[in-house]
Image (cartoon, rainbow, N blue to C red; front, side, top):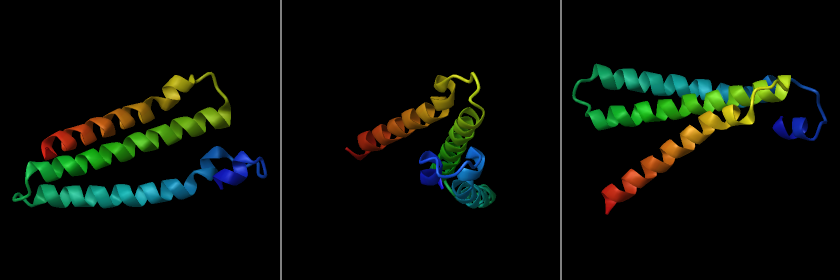
Length: 108
């Protein structure tokens, strides 16, 4: 759908173009939420496991925020600056980079 919209073969709304990705994100959000609730319900799970699941949930929410900002900017061509559109993505990439760095340091 994205390729059709970028090639200007269709005139669909940008929010419709991203529906397949959002459907997957909703399934992933429900899965992560249920797993997090089960982890909190079982008291024997360590805090590291809960932090890992919360991190995955935060990553998903930042990705969704970026998609919503992007669709809003592309659909309505508002005066919404591109800096603010990309801000959730930059925060996500910075967090993932820090997470990888922490894991690399702890492995050595």
